[in-house]
Image (tube, rainbow, N blue to C red; front, side, top):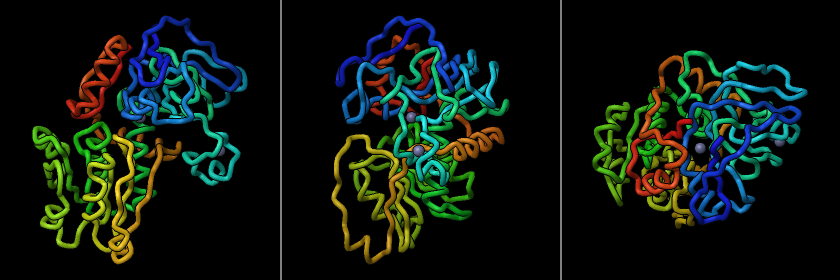
Length: 337
Ligand SMILES: [Zn+2]
Ligand SMILES: [Zn+2]
């Protein structure tokens, strides 16, 4: 089978030929039709994840049918349709046993510490697996850990979204943002989507955004024109480019949930505003199995539709990375096998 490999940080991925993997103890081998490309994969290649060891197969947006089962695997069998956490949790640390396995102190991340999903066949630990209902498409299954499950985590568990919440979403045209609009709407929120690409505005309204702001710079005043009291939640997908505007869009007691950092940097923060308005800033990383199950249920009930930007073959991976970096996509790019 063909696999894409990061052999050296900062360099293009190499396409290599490898044999089909065999499952070890507590592992399964999955056959995938497709896998998603995440901005994190690009940041990994570019050297922003210090725990990365090379060579590594990137990718963590998994979807497929179990083809082989190793010793010690319980509850999963050949033929089961599954998706996977983007990491293998230890199952024993304090965060794991308290239902916050996304914060596991011993986790091993796909595409970073262990080989990931950029191949037709993938080896996975049973502790990472979640069964996929038949109503859910392969694309929605693939993004249920890193995109839709992560967003359930960010908006619900961290952001405390409720019916009628006023939610600002930055980077709204990207792979995360396009699904964030739909999930926030499914929770009954009123959504203002912010994009730097004017040509994406119509698509964002079609996805359910109540308001769309096209801006390459300031937008907090426009948010305040829409909502005099500001936003309850700012979902920050971009990082430095929008961080302060997203923060200043918040009203009193508002929460900012930071899930993206496209050009890793440290934006300044107005501490006076943070204190006087009683705002909260939280980070959020990936999802738990419960978040994935919740996202799969929303997907099965057709509350979320996948936004596919394009499908590529694995040989086109390096060109696809360039297009994603240049924001030429609306939605997710998938590799088809
Ligand atoms: Zn991802
Ligand atoms: Zn753990």
